[in-house]
Image (cartoon, rainbow, N blue to C red; front, side):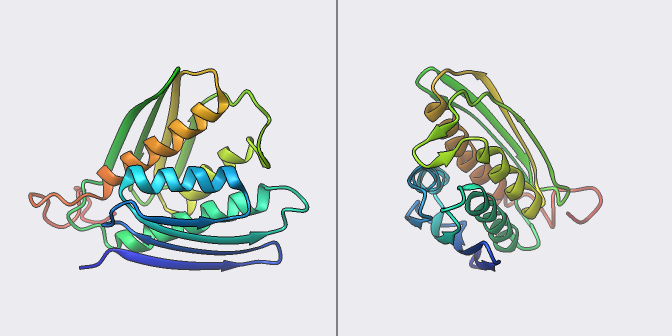
Length: 195
């Protein structure tokens, strides 16, 4: 069974297309108009071993906020769609990832109950054309639209690029674990019988 999904999102502010294959090899094609976001999504796909295509056009003449947030919404929707009924998946995933001076934890639960916590300090206000405060909006949007419980904890870090890069890589690795199939799991991993 293929675990793939494609999502299109169009508003007055953005047009987003996301295609995701959970059982890929880490291939990606990403174009959002925001170089730093392209780089981060490419890392997410590579380290999670997802095949990912993202095309985004947004009102970048205003700022990066709408494009970043709406890309997060579309990615979360694609994750939720691709994982389907969640039968046989491990459900939980976590990764502790070092990136030079940074050490980052990402833990998530594909519970169907969205919740987001981010304990990380982004010291630089901007990286390239991206306002770094939009990173929180991206992950919050992905958690909400993907109906996942998503936590980040920075143990230490100085360089904002490294902190954010560690977040995206750890997110990819944690999600890869959560969506992996375990043959011992019958139905879904919940005593309720549904997720």
